[in-house]
Length: 165
Ligand code: ZN
Image (cartoon, rainbow, N blue to C red):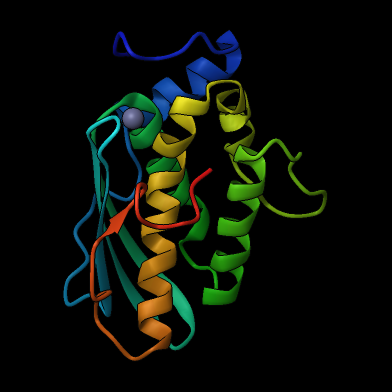
């Protein structure tokens, strides 16, 4: 794990490290229905998200993150969680992650995978944008898709999205 990783609880750190070292969703998706790129200039994180839909379902998702361990791990968790979900369910999970980064607990009764490992990031405001980057990038991708576009008119940035804390 890189030197910029904050001191997280060791259990959560192990989960993050596992996602960072073996990111999920790295398999390219041929002929994706929607593609977006995102960046977090404050940290230098970059992510590319591509989704193949089957009707309303995110049938396959490719997430390629470059940057700090938290951004890469968060993108990996996202790939794991949203694959096979409907667009509405994915949007719900995006809202859950934003709430989590703003200090709210994870909701009961919703499959949230390894997201609890991101909880500790709340304590490091500068890293919150690292964790949010892939989710904001997917959010803009899904919004573009709902508007019938293959990609958003502009790439996602944590500094211009208006959704970052
Ligand atoms: Zn970062």
